[in-house]
Image 1 (cartoon, rainbow, N blue to C red):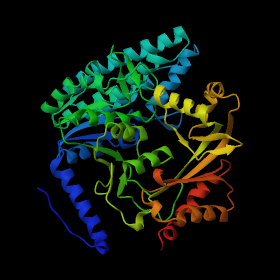
Image 2: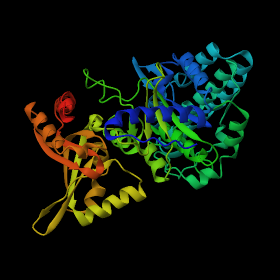
Image 3: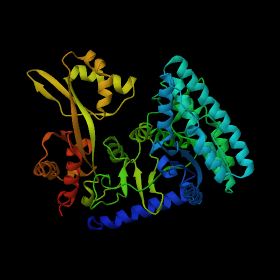
Length: 502
C-alpha cells in the first residue's frame, strides 16, 4: 500500500516524525530475518550480561527470526578487561618465541558459563565440542612454537577456536537451555568464504553464495541461529580472520547473503545508541543521533567513532543494497539509531550530526601520478581504505597529492613500499584530525570558518583545513601532541548551536 502525504515547507518537522513512524512500522512488520550482532561489551566481562542478551534476543524474536553473531568474550586478564582475541594473540606470540605458557585461561570462561547456564544434556554436548576446540588451539600453538612464527592459518585457527567459535556454540546451548528453538552454524559448514589473506581476509560474495545452504536450513528450522563473527574460510576450508572489528563485517556479509531470500535488517547491540561525540571525550551537551546515512556512519567510523566497522557499510553499499541498520542501546532498546543508504531531508537543525577525531595519523605527499598508482594498489590489491585524499597543490608545473592515513603505524610498517613509488615522497607523522560530519553541512557556508575560528580561539594550531561538499565532512588537521585532538573536538562540539544558527 502506498500513502501520499502532501506537506508544506514549514511542516518538515511533522514529515520527519512521520518518517520515523514509517521506519518503525517497517521494522516491526516487514522484516523476515534480523542479523543481531553482540560484541564483547554486550556480553559483559566473563559473560556477566548473558541474562540481558537472552532477554534481548527474546524481544527481537517478536519481530522476526534471528541470526545472532557473537564476538569473542571479554575476560579479566593481568588485571585488565581484555578480549579473548588479545589473550590468544599474547599466547601465540609467547609460543612463537619458544616461551610456552599455560593455556587454561583460553577455556576457563566457557567452562564456567556452561556450568552456570546449561542443562545437563547441553553441557555434555558442549563440553565435548569445547574439548575438540581446545585441542585445535593446542595443536596450532605447538606449530607456532615449531616454526617460531605465529602467522597465517596458525594464527587464524588459534583465534577462531579460542574465541568466536566456542562463544557462538556456547550461546546456542545457552538459548536451548532457556527454552529457545536454537541452532548454531557449524564451522564445518561455514557460510563466510574469503580469499587466503589469512590475517586480513576479504569477503568473496559469489563463493559464499555457494556455501549458504546449511545456514538457510538452520534459519528455516529454528527461531534463532548463532554464529561467530570475525572468522572466514577459504574455498579449500582453511580458517581466516578479518581485521579487528571484523564481527561487524560478518553481520553485514550475512545480511548481504540473505537479502535475496528474506527481508533483512541488521541490529548492532551496544551499550548506547549513537551520540553526537564520543562520551569519553565530550562530557556535556551530548545528544543522541536518531538517523544517519550510510555515508555519515561510514565517515564517523573511519574517524574514530565506535559505531561499527566502516568496511561493513562499504560492503553493503558496494553491492548496491539498502539494508536497514540499527544501533540499539541494549539496556534501553527504545533508544536506537537508524542507518540507511539515504535519508529524507533532516532540516537545518541537524547540519552537523557528529564531531569526532583520530590521533596517530600521518600525511603522505608525493606527485599525483605516483600517488594514483599507490592508491590503486592499496584499494584494489590490498583492499585497504583507511585513508583520505586531501586537496592537491602545485609546485611549479607538478601537481602534488596529499593523502591523510588514519593509522600511522601502517605507514611505519610499510614505509619502504611507499618510497618505492616515489623517491621524493614526504611522510609527516604525529598528526591528528578532527572531523565534522553531516550530509547537509553544505547548506551553511559559515561552518568551516566558524569551526576554524573556534579551534584557534582555544589555542590549537590548525595545520590544514580540508572541506569538500561532496564528501559531507570537514577535516581539521592538527599536531598530535598532548590533548590537542580531544580539546579541538570538545571546542567544536560546544559551539554546535552557533553552527545551526541558534
